[in-house]
Image (cartoon, rainbow, N blue to C red):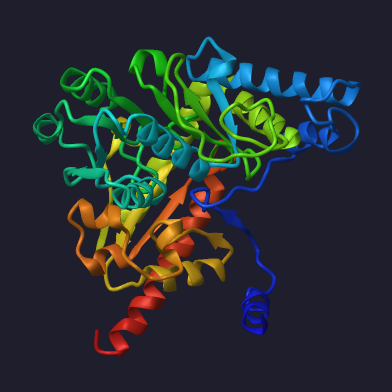
Length: 405
């Protein structure tokens, strides 16, 4: 604990702070927090299954939140929204629930090499129960290899899971084409997508895409942590993976967290209220950050595609002769908060599986940092980040050179 305290003290008085680690967590904006606060102790604080005023209020708040969120993903039925404690839980529910429900029809599951670990690790677990996972490769920008998918998809496939947008490198996947390929080969297969990095930033419509299951997350659109949702298309059935107290959520037992659900809906409304303007603002700042890094520093590599094939908020760059973990510390001391690789691999210093899948060498993957911009960031924020990155990278490379690197 003492080491952590010393690290915090080392920051001193920061002249500016810019938080860009929205991949891993999010501060809740005041305008969202204000909407949530009454639901902790003044209204709708009851169990939504009980027949009294606080319970009815909670039921109404949850129902209206589900209705709003459903409309934002193109669902006409609020009952298709199933709230979970987050993206990881929704992905577990989707894959385990679908696999167990269809185990008599087949055992083959298709995923891409660049899925989040909450998909890949679940697939690994399912292999212990007789299922087979087939990984579909991606190209050097992270796009699913559709030709290879055509070869791997067959009548044995019962479940496929492909992200709508890659969380690490921002690749907007050809999801509709992937759905068509899988359904053509195996019409009864269930198609799931983790759409957490598409929701609120990229046009995403479950009806147009014809997906059966879709995961979305609150904190990735500046909502509260601890809440997410799984869209389950009408007529699609899943096995429950938890048992417990009956609630309004048929697939997830327990007493619902009404304040977080309301916060999720409020954050969704903010993200979609000026969708095109928000996206344009983020994309402009994203491009300013990318060009400022690539043109301002030698030995830098952009991970993922450019332009409108990339999520508007995502920036992932590898810095040669510069270790990513050290760079996150150097930037933190300057008040710039980013992440190195993915959140799930950061603490154990393993290179990102996504970067390895697109062909990055170990040293390139280890030297990467991930940043995400929001509608709240300004040009001044980006200029400060660029200045801080130049200073931090120069310092680390100087140290690297003095050590004979």
